[in-house]
Structures are given as C-alpha cells and as structure tokens.
Length: 444
Image 1 (tube, rainbow, N blue to C red):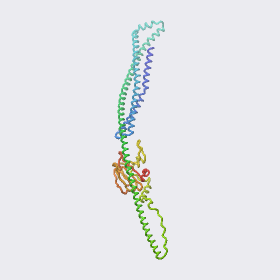
Image 2 (image 1 turned 60 degrees about the horizontal axis):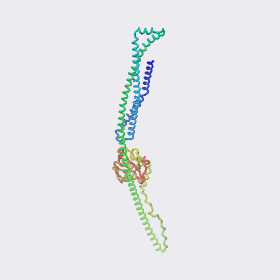
Image 3 (image 1 turned 60 degrees about the vertical axis):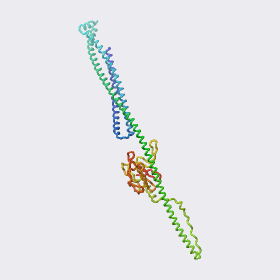
Image 4 (image 1 turned 120 degrees about the vertical axis):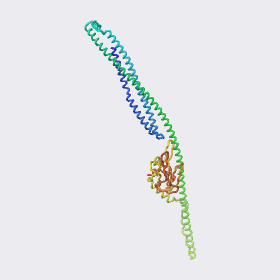
C-alpha cells in the first residue's frame, strides 16, 4: 500500500512538472523576439542609408527613438523568457529532487524485499510457511502470496529502472534549461550594451540636431535680414523711378502749358492788332467803332494735374491685360508663397514667391519693359524692370546679362539663377507702384 502511494505521488509530480513546462509558452516569446529583431535590423538599414546625409532629419531622429524603444521591448521579452525559464528550472529542480527522494525510498523498500526473499528463498522454508496454515483456504492464500510477491518484486525492479530513466531525462531537461538561461543572460547583457550605445548615439544625434536647428534658425534670421535690406532697396528704387516719372510728367506738363500760353499770347497779340486795325479803319471812315469780341473764360492752367505719359499708360494696360497668362521667369515649383509666414515664433512676409528651378537655369523676363536697377547686395544680383506703372523683380541671380536703361522683351534671358542653402532658388516679385502683388495670380 505504501509503495502504491509513493508511485501515485511520483506520477503526479512528473505530470505537474510536464504541464508547467508546457504552459510557459517559450515559442511565443521567441517569435515575438524575432519579430522585434527584424524591425530593429530594418531601422538599422535605414540608418545606414541615411548616414551619407550629413544633416539629420526628423525622420532619422524618430527612427532612432523607435529603434531604442524596440530594443527595450526586446530586453523585456528576454526578461520574460528568463522569468519563464526560471519557473521551469525551479519546477524541474523540485521534480528532480522529489524523484531522487522517491527513488531512494523505492530502492530502500526493494532492498528490504530482497532481504526477505533471501531469508525465504529455499523450498523447505516456503513449504513450512504453507503447511503452517490453519486450513486449506489459508494455505491457498499463502501460496498465492508467495507467487504474487515474486511477481511484484520483478515489477518493482522494472519500476525502479523506469524511475531512474525518468530521472535522467529530467536531469537532461534541467541541464538544457540552465544552458538556455546562460545563453539568455549573455544575450540580455549584449542587448543592454547595444541599448547603451544607441542611447549615446541618440544623445549625440539630439545634440547635433539641436545645433543644426540653431544654425538653421540663425541662417533664416540672417537671410530674412538680408531680404529686408533688399526689399527696402527695391522699394526705394521703385519710389525713385516713380518720382522720376512724375517729375518728367510734370516737366512735360509745364512745357505744354508754356507752349499753350505762348500760342495764346500770340493769338492775343494778333487779335489785338486786328482790333486796332478795325478801330483805326472805323475812325478814318468816321464810322462807329465796333464793340470788342467777348473774352473767353479759361481754367487756370496751374490747377490742371500732370498727365501720365501715354507710353507708360499703354504699357501698364498691356501688362494688366496679361494677368494670369504671363510666362514664368523659370520652370519649377513654387516653394514659398506670397504674404505672411511663420518660422517658429518669428513672423515674416514674402513680397513675392520663391521658385525652385534646375541648377544654372536661365532667368527670363515676363513682359516687355525697361531695366531700372541691377544690384548685387551680399554677392547675389537682383534685376528691377519697369512695365509702365508695374514693376517685376528677379532676385538671387549669380550673373546678369542686362544693364540699367536697357529695353527688354518678353522671355528675354536676363541672367542665371543662383543657389541658396544648397538649392537653386529664385524670388520673383510684382509691384504696382509701391504695392506688392501676388505673382501666383499673374503667371501661368
């Protein structure tokens, strides 16, 4: 009875250990770890491709942060594997210890059986045991007992051998568990080292990005300052041209007024001579002197406004009629529109539009006109062209092929576009007097 209890206990321990081993589900953890490693490897490949670009991008920073997060997840999966393995090792260790104890007890009991069998192994002793029975039934039962005792002893020997085999198997599993744990510990340490290196890389990347962003913002501030100076120069040039045109118009009006007054004075003198002749003739003929003709009242010439020269008015009208159909000064996409823009906390205004053509693209005029200014502040040229009351500005040229006072025609090449921040860039403006217009509504 005691042996049966021990047997059932051993079987229960073996089953519980086997079930616990299966419930840890290490395959799922390994699958998750492999998936994380694939994602980490893909991010590393992306980083290697981007390494050729000296300037960091937001995406590179995001990829690095994601990589670190995935590595932390992988370490957590390894920790989960180790926790699961620790449970297995603990349970299998208990199973091995229990098997050792139970096997020792079985061997001890088996030794007792052997000693008992040795004492009663001769036929005389067995016969005396049977003949000492009180009746036939008891004698039969003693015979069956001796027969079953021999069979049980053989079974017990086989059971002990089975337990020894189970014990060896469990020891092999336990040894495998310990090796897996050792391997996981090494992998964990390796991943922690990689994580530390990536965090250092992250710190360097963030510092570099911060420095680049600061440099970028300073560059923007510098460019905006320069652009403000150039815009003032353009406005001043337009104002000067308007003043010159006004002065010319006023001078033309003054000359016209003087011409009319001289003509009127000549007409008055002629009329006065004619009147004097009529009066003399009437007196000589003793006839009544005819009354003088009525004086015509005229508007004071000084009050008449100076007229805009006809040629400017016609050119302005022609320019206006081409709204929406003017050719582009360069081929390329618009990278920044007209008007108000925000750069972080700063606000600035673009009096035109920014275009991004090909490298060394030729810059063309959009309409007939006259070159009013060619200047090169900060090493880059701009050209101001008058189209009557309208003006166009072509800014950021590395060379120009026109000069002040030159007449230009539509689509004429006036220069070559320069680069800014490593890319070809042209700022194009349209003005009506001193009011900036949105070029996007004028070009096709």
